[in-house]
Length: 418
Ligand code: EPZ
Image: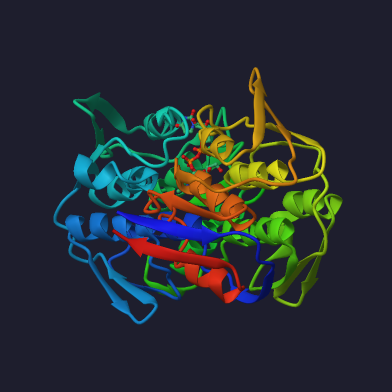
């Protein structure tokens, strides 16, 4: 088990490169199952969620090897169609293999996914979409047994703009003859990235990022070389960290348009943020003022994946802030750890009320999930004294070498392997 040891009080100054988007890489890795040709993914960080998806692809019979920072995947010789509980339970993205396995092999046996403990996270929208396309789906003993012999194109109306369900349908429909329409799809930049990847492999998808995605199935997909968009949640995390610590940071590769909601809130609470070519520069000179309130929503609304980090910012901002989490009913667990650091956080029904404090302090805290853990790191950066953060393997799921990047910005943080 590893811990972070953080000493608070340093400003952040310097530049870091934003890594490839975790939530693009995971569905794109699943998409490699759709083709018998070689795919090269460029500049892939070793997020532990990526490593988990690699193990699933290898289990199915795919070949995966690292060439420096690039990942070479070849799913020509798949010899299994099952994803065991042991492989599926660590990550939510294991459910993204359902569509591609069905499209390629017609039969799938996939265990329920795992992932961050932030709510129930059902998969009913994934399964109802497969059924709408003519798939036979039976849930038994913790497994999803799916038969795709009679899969055909159809129109699918999503009652909720689920990211994962949208991606599963895109992948399944990309090799299903005819035109499939997804109405009310997720519109995240990672959905557009997946469309671009599948189209680069010879697919025919359009409308990603809009209210309707149209997929015309093709017979085969070929391989390609691909680099995903930068990780907007990593970029957002570093923008919030700078707002909290003060200083000036250049985020190489950051795309301002992917974080409009966050930037509007940060500029309101005394941050200067500008785009300069392919970079974002964020500067904070004094204690932040409250950003007011945030309500998480599907893209382009405020991202739920930055909610925990904003709670850390609110905890040391001048004034009261409100946070309403609309996507995941269990995504406030980090508040309990922030309270141990002296933060003033209360709940009224599902609204979180934070009274900003001049000083918080660092006892020993424990990561509750990926983004909750990141919020504790941010709080540690501004705490009196030092903070130890346990269970940082949860943070490694979606941040690669976080301590190195923060150290390069002059934060005082180190990883202690126990
Ligand atoms: C993706 O999860 C992301 N993960 C999450 O990021 C992100 O928080 C989430 O989208 C929302 O943006 C990956 O891309 C790997 P959803 P996903 O399906 O696909 C309900 C991170 O920190 N729902 O859009 O699981 C669900 O309960 C992670 O990087 C159903 O009811 O999200 C939730 O309330 C955490 N039935 C809401 O939709 C379903 O079948 C959003 O879920 C599916 C979802």
